[in-house]
Amino acid sequence: MKILVFGPQGSGKGTQAELISRKYKLPYIATGDIFRFHIKEGTQLGKKVKSYVDKGELTPGSLTNEIVKDRIQQPDCSVGFVLDGYPRNISQQKFLESIAKIDLVFVINISDTEAVSRLKDRLACKCGLSYHPVNNPPYKKGICNKCGDKLFVRDDDKPAAIKKRLAIYHKETELVLEIYQKSNTLHQINGAQGIEEVFAEIDNIIILYK
Ligand code: ADP
Ligand code: ADP
Ligand code: ZN
Image (tube, rainbow, N blue to C red; front, top):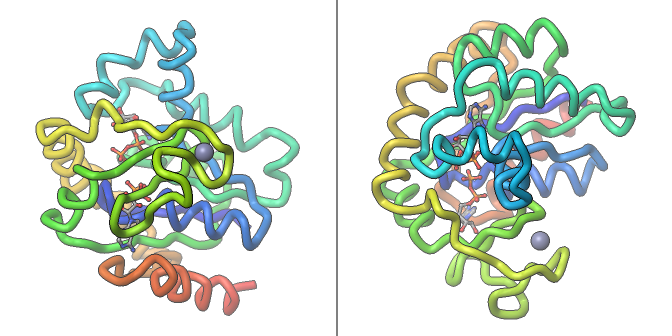
C-alpha cells in the first residue's frame, strides 16, 4: 500500500503517518526528516539545503525528487510506504506519478490558527516523532518514547518561518490536492480532534481499501 499524508504544518501528518506505519508495517518516509538528518550530520546535501530549511522555503530544483526516488526503491519499500512532506508542488507530483502508483491520499485539515498554536510548542525527535507538552506529552520529559533520544525545538518552528511554510502550503501544495481529488484518491480528514480520533478516521478508510 502506497499512502501519502498531506495537511498544513502542525496538522499532525507526522503523528498520523507514524501510527499508520506502525499498524500496517509500512516504512515511514518524511522528506523533512531526511533533510534535518543531513543538516545535523553536516553532509554535502545538508550544507546545500540548510539555508532553505531554516527559512521555511522549499529546497530548489529536483533535489527532493531524487531523494524520494532513491528511498522508495529500497527493498523495504516493496510492501509500500507512508510518505509525509512530498509532493509539495505540481512538478514533484508529476515526478512521483512517473515512478509510483499511489493508492490512498489523506489530507488532514486544521485552521492556520490551530496550526500555529500547536507548532509553537512542538518538541521534535530526530526519529520523526513529535510531541506536545499538553496534547501529546512524552512519558519522560524531554525524551522520545520510541528511541530515547533528546527532544528538540525545530529551528523553523519560529513565527516567521511557520508563516512562510503555511503560505507555501496554501499556494503550492493545495494545487497538488486538486489532482488527487480528480482521481478520487483523496480523503479529507478532520484534524481538529484528538490524535486517536483522527487515526480512527484514517484507519476506517484504509480498512475499506485493503
Ligand atoms: P505535522 O507533521 O503535520 O507538522 P506533527 O505530527 O508534528 O504535525 O504535529 C504537530 C504538533 O501537534 C505536535 O506537537 C504534535 O504532538 C501535536 N499534535 C498532533 N496531532 C494532534 C492532535 N490531533 N491534536 C492536538 N495536537 C496534536
Ligand atoms: P513542515 O512542517 O514545514 O512541513 P517538514 O519537516 O516536512 O516541515 O520539512 C522541513 C523543510 O524541509 C521544509 O520547510 C523544506 O525546506 C524542506 N522540504 C521538505 N520536504 C520538501 C519537499 N517535498 N520539497 C522541497 N523542500 C522540502
Ligand atoms: Zn525518537
